[in-house]
Image (cartoon, rainbow, N blue to C red; front, side, top):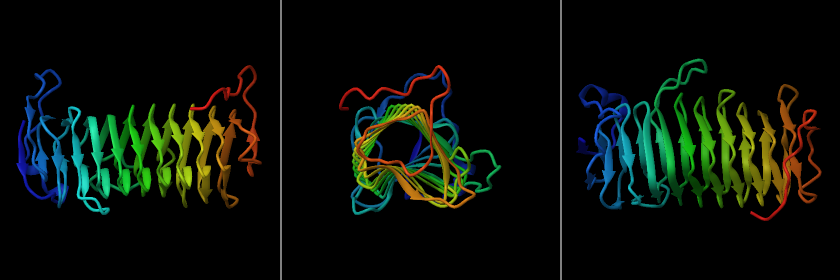
Length: 293
């Protein structure tokens, strides 16, 4: 494990001086006290909370680096400032802890914004709670982040994919935000939500702006302002439940936009849905709404 205590720098300037993280066969890293502003070039397991009253949090600055929060917290200065974890490399991981009190809880460094370019900086969040931020996870400019078995809550937006970024949410909960997940100006797989619970978001569970894309399946959209809110964007919701939203779906589309609502279930309140609703394929039943979650 190596790190340097320093302010968060423009990540593209770091690569020439950083060591490579240990391989998968290496022994688990010893629990370590990490300072605010650290730039990690090897995997780290925290020995204590990291509380940052000013400045930035932690940068993952080498491919394959893992930040194991080890049940601890990475706490920012509040007031919508700073970045908790900056992913400035490929194949990085953040797991097992809480990130709170930042402007951006987790975000990627800037890479290529070309639609056909491969993802630049990439990472996975696993078993992480991101809360009380402006945005829990934000990905732009060609980056890609997977959120798995995690909770994004109590923020303005839980997860955001913008300007060519990609966010994939799997088996996670997006709750008590203004908006659970949002996409704007993304590629077709810009925002993907699978087998997740999206609930109690005051404006919308899933929302997209101009040229955004969303792809939701096997999920529950419950007690949101809008279950799905769209504005000049494209996407699909399939095999999912719309439960007790103030409005299940709404928004504005122009002729070139497409919305597919396929094989979903809807409670009576929250309707009618102002977009075409497609039935399930033959032999497939819509998901059953059976109990309060």
